[in-house]
Each structure stands twice: as C-alpha cells, then as structure tokens.
Image (cartoon, rainbow, N blue to C red; front, top):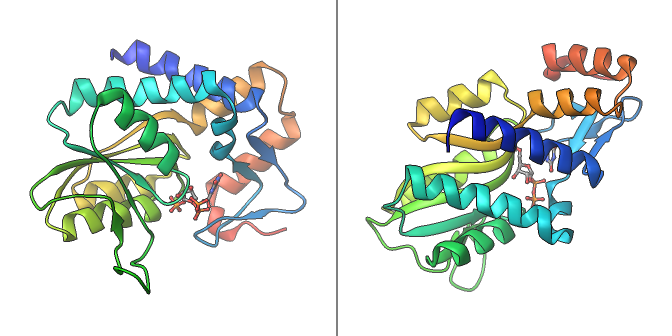
Length: 215
Ligand SMILES: O=P(O)(O)OC[C@H]1O[C@H](OP(=O)(O)OP(=O)(O)O)[C@H](O)[C@@H]1O
Ligand SMILES: O=C(O)c1cc(=O)[nH]c(=O)[nH]1
C-alpha cells in the first residue's frame, strides 16, 4: 500500500468509527483505560463487529498490509479479546491458520496462554484492535516469542500515537502498523463538526500529560 493509500485508509476508518459512534468523549466523567490512565476519550472498536462493511474494510486493510510486508506469515493471532474477531476474518481472507493470545495463561485446563496451534519457529502476525500504551499487544507478541515462535509484527486498527508506545515497540524489536490513528480521528471529527472547540482544548490538555489528567 502506498503512503497515500495508507493515509486515505486512516481517514476512512476514522470516519467510520465516528459514524458508528465508536468514539465517546466524556471529559466530565473520564474513562479508566486498561493501563489505569484516566481519559476523556474512549474508542470502542468492538462496535465494528456489528457493521459488515466496516469490519470488511478493516480486514482488507490488514490483509493487504500482511501480503505486502509479511508474505511469509504462517499464523494470524488475535489478542484477547477485542483482537480475536479481526484476526479470524483476516486469517480467513489469507487462508492461514488462526490463533489467539490470552492476557495470561489459563489457570485450569491446558493452562495455555496461546490458544490454537503455534509451533516453535512459526512466523506470526499479531492482530490487535487498539494501541494505547501498547502494553497488552506487546505482552501478546512477547508471549509468542516466549513460545519459541517469531512475532513478525503487531497490526492494530487504531493507535493513540503515544511516543511511549512507539518507543516500547522499538525497544522490543517488534514492528507496529496501524490502520488509523488519533491524528486522523481528531481531523475527521473536527471536519465533520462532531467535536467542539472546547473538547479539542480538553483533549489537547489530556494528551500533553495523560498520566496527570484528573477531573
Ligand atoms: O495499549 P494498551 O494500554 O494495552 O490498551 C489497549 C488494550 O485495551 C483494550 O483491551 P481491554 O483490556 O479493555 O480488554 P478487551 O480486549 O478484552 O476488551 C484494547 O482492546 C487493547 O487490547
Ligand atoms: O486503553 C484502553 O483500555 C482503551 C482505550 C480506548 O480508547 N478503547 C479501548 O477499547 N480501550
């Protein structure tokens, strides 16, 4: 995919997320993220499951990137839970095995963290729905590495583009690619009049120092 095509896809997906009201702004009652960060914004990509045309656009975006960048991929693995359905649709498109990765090993049964079949040495693309700190998907990719397989990259629908997340992936030596991002989302929301100037100011204040954001 060319850079122009990637940029267009980032805009399209951001517009779709806004259209289906996957993006919620709640400055007066911040959301608590999985990392514990308090945030005036929450992007619920799980809602894309309800829209066949949108989930198809996501699956097609992932499949195109994988064919172009990682034609050697042998397994598509979703992160538990929100990455799982997207991994399934992509694996189906590419006619590849699919697996999923729990946030930790089960305490009963086979006590697996990785479910499905990932053999040592196999090349795995990890599919995630969203990157905030990147902690969840990095943990998943590192579990693949721990199992003796090779995490080629993490691909996600959306990223908040925090420098700390970019640095964490670089440090782990795991490439990260995303179909859309915070910049596109805010641009699309502003262009469509879906976000007020006061909200933009609130988001800027939060984004400058999310750890310190409290209401
Ligand atoms: O980049 P991070 O800081 O790790 O945050 C992003 C993660 O948080 C959400 O998952 P959540 O923990 O809400 O679980 P779910 O996928 O089961 O909904 C989301 O689906 C990502 O996996
Ligand atoms: O970091 C998170 O937990 C998170 C943020 C967000 O916008 N959406 C989501 O599903 N999780």
